Length: 369
Image (cartoon, rainbow, N blue to C red; front, side, top):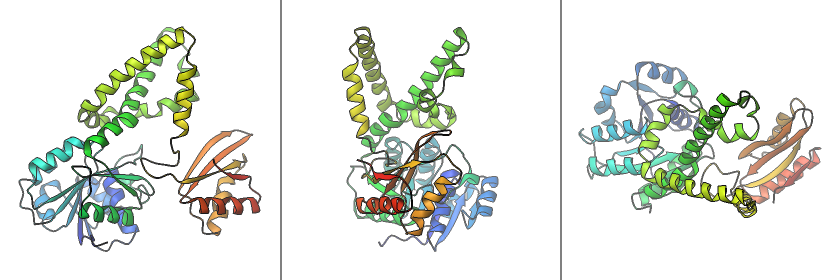
């Protein structure tokens, strides 16, 4: 890997920006990390060790003159404005500018329009996050095993894109994937943006019924809560995402309305069997160990006892044999009854070894087929 920048700048040191800084330091990056943000965020980021030096946004020209790579980590519309501002500054040859925005078409288009040809722009979207915000929530392991999408303009990576991907994988611990910006936005609209709108709509529907039948929300547990968990996110966080991806989301809403009309007719005719079967078969093919669009990990299932320290004992047993868990999920646990824990590993060989180790240590485990 030849791409090892000497100095990196992080524009807007919030959750993602702070986590990038911590991840870089935690994985041995030896260069200088500079942050541009509000005075309070700079103070917190420096106290936590996310950055080496902190500056106000007004110092952007000074900072970019001293860095090889800059991460734009603000909300999408702010990223676009930052790109336009950078295009008016004096930038040194071969500066790499990248971003972490959740939609890519608008950002990549802005970069093509505003940045000079001697500057390299690489669109990026780390598919990870937290319900928390700000640099105080920074996590050096936020990107571990998460998918980091890189969006070359035509979808085909050149040598710099590939070097940048290797850099991210080494220092952030993520897994990279190359997608055309438009394809990225259509996929994100399908699996993220529309589902969020549907979750908001379901919760508002339940509230409407609550006003007519008090107690409705009291019984909204289990599946309803699981389906609508994401509806708790503030609109301020989603405004830029939805406003810059309308062309992908709006046709999906129309398609969903059409499908819902078909479901309504099938309900009336007691003919929902095919829809349920197709849904079950399709969902079974979605890799539950993937935090995005990437190769499938190898999974095992462990029967969990409902007792203090069970998960700690489970992970410690594997750690003692130097077996690394890539992903973990508590699938079913009922108080007093136990349940199932899903563990994912890099390869079938490692998964098989994990099962053998756990069985030898008294756990009930099997490979997931």
